[in-house]
Image (cartoon, rainbow, N blue to C red; front, side, top):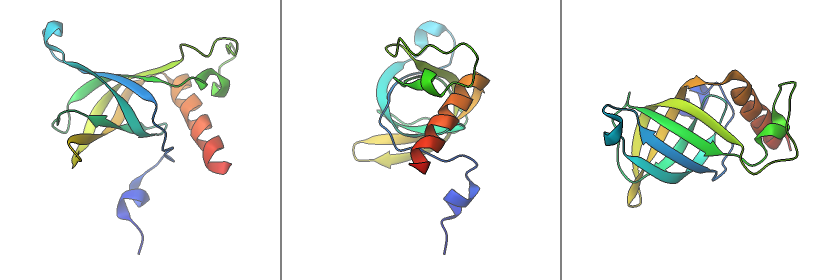
Length: 132
């Protein structure tokens, strides 16, 4: 028997604890709670992150994921290999699921607005890691 969750996934996931900054998108902006965490896994279509609190499905979060070697996998013409210090995937993501996990929560997030080159770079990074 196969896992139906894995059958539904369009993108391969890479289990990697990249640092993540996240904040809920709501108004006024001063009411946006920000938290720092780590992702459980990442793909070209989304990621899952540890969270100190639960969020309702459909909630939009602004996420910033620090991926030190992201430029290395960029399909764009202008690649920057010299400076790996500040490479981030920035996206607007939607909460698709929330699960309780050992004193906190794990959020499943789907990108709803992300730069195409950045998403392709993540896909290239994940595919290379999975094939290795």
